[in-house]
Image (tube, each protein chain N blue to C red):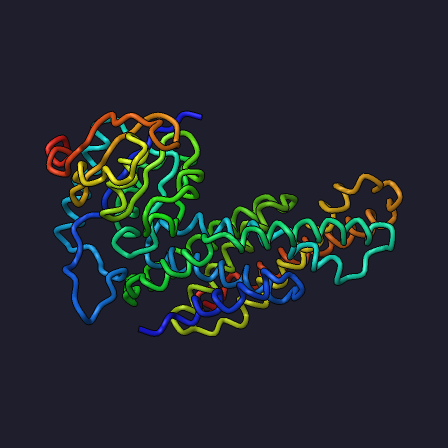
Length: 161
Length: 233
């Protein structure tokens, strides 16, 4: 069951504020523009997705919306509570096969990458997922069974656009 | 910020629909999901549509069976339909027990408001879509699918109007008229799926005749409504 997984950190969002719940922080205008440029970079690499899973938090929903033009014609989006929490067995079991993008948050995305590549989520500190950055993995969605094919920082993606 | 009433409607139906004993809750779950789909269209959003479709698809078979069983079908068929509904209810309960519905509600609760000018442009698009589908239904008067597509477009127009504070009663009546055709069509599909359907050839003939009547009535209702469509919305 082969999976190409694109782990995407949400784009630049509003700063935290006491008056607003963290989960309701929206993308900034700059965040939207920069990520949209990065999506054009993904297009230049010929990348498209069968599915985009995203956390229910606003900045992830908005990032997934910006990524949606890269869906294949029959592609689908799916909201996933598991992407607003530490990586779980349920999250891995639900990834499936094909070309899938997951949009979520740090530190959980680094933990997810570490878990899939090395078998240990605790190695997550070794990966830095910048906002709007993408980690490209390939293999089976089991701990230690995926290979990191590329780490695409947001600036590199924008330069490709 | 208080959640939108449409989102509260979905949230409130989930427990009863999952418990599976109240047909109204399953119906209202589908209504709520259809309304939220219109919200996304008005906002111009692609995300969350597939989650809503997943929800409607899980509830759809239960709803169709509830409607048919509410019309007291012949006893031999009735037992098979009830068994099928039990299976459909179990599938719906399993779907509603996953984290996905709660995540969907959460995602909607955090969306930014849709500006009124944006929503009005969405209403305009919905109206154009109804006209296009209405023309297609008139140009192919024997095609049932064209009428179903028109019905769905009318439903979306009605909800878009309601979002903007309208009370499109005439649109609702028109949608319901077309809905009667859909109910007969679903009944025929379920009859065709029954292994012992040959026992009920009279019932099949009756349903075919009713469906033809409803099809003609639907097209006639559309022709009467079409000239006044903009004021209805």
